[in-house]
Length: 255
Image (cartoon, rainbow, N blue to C red; front, side, top):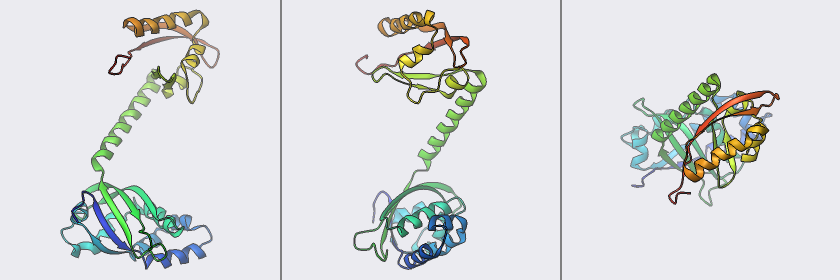
């Protein structure tokens, strides 16, 4: 009852035959059909009954009592989430007994939140789906942080592309590097899915490779500043001047 997550027990026994009928009659496949006819998603969702839910589940949707349960469907099933519901319905119609989604919802007071939702059919209820356990966790703040980070990354990406500035990160333990989009599209480095130090050096002009190696070694061994100008031969066989600056991040042991 007092679990730190929202817990619902739902009865899908009326929704199950409706899904089975659609699955057996629609020609395009159940999921495609539900995508194309969102009104069917609404119709099936309305057949689901809430048997019980805990207090946190009520608070998550902005309800004060179970008397407001008829309105809860409208909190979750919106134009933004109808495909999420279609995915769940198609999965359960295909016999799956577990499903997890992240989806937005609108509380009864109009506030927008984001929930992680897990659905599970307990053993013995697979045929008629008369018991489906749903847990809900409010992940709004983490999603906001994730969206802000994604916006920041996109802004950085666009800034790099506009300014011709590339970034890369090298893991010296695994010899793997991560190159930004601008490194390949603006600076002319070849496209590698998992570039290495040798891949990087192969682009550096042969007359400048030792300069680059020496600068990296001096930075790693003696903590000298890594700031160097050198030439590369880009993917169009043009000689281009590059200026690189960077700093090594070490673990707690100094490696």
